[in-house]
Each structure stands twice: as C-alpha cells, then as structure tokens.
Length: 88
Image 1: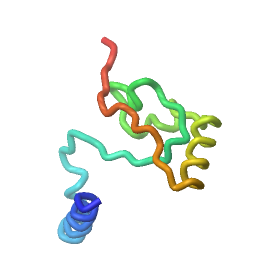
Image 2: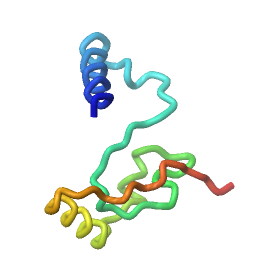
Image 3: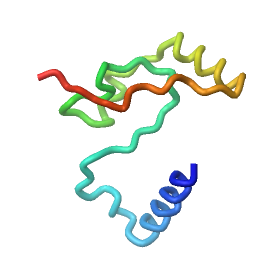
C-alpha cells in the first residue's frame, strides 16, 4: 500500500511537470481492472496492447459473482499468476 501511494505521488508529479513523459518509450504497461472478465491465457497477446481488450476480454458471470462476494465479505480473491508465457 505504501509503494502504491509513492507511485501515485510520483505519477502525479511527473504528469504536472511533463504531461506526455509517461507515454514515451514505455516497454511495459500498468493494467488495472476488476477481475470479472474472462481473458486469453496471456491476458494481452504477444503483439497487441490494451487496445485489444475489447476484442479478447469478455464478461465472466462466475468471476463477477466471486468478485461481488469478496467485496461483500471484505475478502481477497485468489491472486492470478504474474507470469506470462506466449506460445510461439
């Protein structure tokens, strides 16, 4: 939580100093969403970015129900794997 606050403050300061700096030569993405969507195994594919989300992601009723229950009970969802493997 402390690291998130530091990153938010840093992003806010950078955006004020140079609004477009966060778009330059970024080799990674920060992606935040409620876990109520079904996705391909690799979340984003090897050659597309977040613009592919509307094409490949879909509403998943079970995940949405699990999210609603977790919020209702102030519980955490199972953490998905952070590793991404692309098929060649």
